Amino acid sequence: MLLPTLFFITLAAACTCHLLTLRVRRYLLAKQVMDTPNERSMHSVPVPRGGGLAVVATIGAGLLLLIDTTSLEPTLLLLAALALLVTISWMDDRRSLGAGIRLATHLLAALIGSFALDSLGGDQAMVLGGALPFWLDRLVMILGWGWFMNLTNFMDGIDGITGMQTACCAAGVGLLLYPLSSGEMIFPLLLAALVCGAALGFLKMNWHPAQIFLGDVGSVPLGFVIGFLLLKLACAGHLIPALLIPLYYLADSGITITRRALRREKIWQPHRTHFYQRATSGTGSPVPVVLWIAAGNVFLLGSAYGAMRNPWLGLALGVGVLGLLLAKLSLLAGTNKSS
Image (cartoon, rainbow, N blue to C red; front, side, top):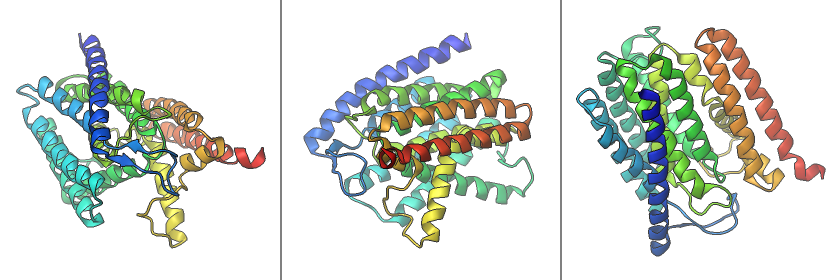
């Protein structure tokens, strides 16, 4: 019965999120909450920003509907963290807040989320499997989770990319956890189906040419919930598969920020130098770029599946897939120059 249930949750979340996105878009247009293009933007006309309200509302409502005695505590903790992130991120979408306030909020949400992981497993969740003392493992978890929320926000720069990436990551975690679907793994499986469906429902309105953008109110909370799913997989003893599923996002953001830091640029400021941004400039459309990244994600999931059995072989395959994907995006970046 579990597989039909997961399918139904995904479908229901997709339909619900799509309908909510239509309503949110009308609200944003009425209030003139728009993302106006500038010299660093990848879009050319103003687009309503704040569609993440529909995505997070779908996930939150789904969590409340799926709540039971075994998932009460982690659900309430996740909802509290999401409420905090939505509140601050929505304020940031309306009027830019300081980086310190945003960072403190992300780290506090990660701390709350770590308690959700503890309550779900009935023990202290540890990412590195006891290789470090608990306090240091927890510090690594919180800092890494906070970074993941930020990189999800950094990478939300072209039509369709975050909806696609979120759906791929949630589906990937769900597929890897499905064989372990008992006890504490039921909750993350249901959450993965819910998040995947919400992302797909939003993606229909965010596909190029996008009719609505997520905004920080969507990208940051989505980074939080995907981080929760990946950390649950890591805490179950599968750290390498958990790193392989979002490997493209980790690599693109990490390489780009390192390059900018070496050039002494202000890494927190908007720019157009990510692999996906340069590829979009080369092709003139985000569609082929998003499709190539989606294809890469499929092969990264295959590598993660292999890593469940042979971690080092899976890691080697994943690094190979990543190298080919980054090379392809680099070739796309030069399309216009060579034509």
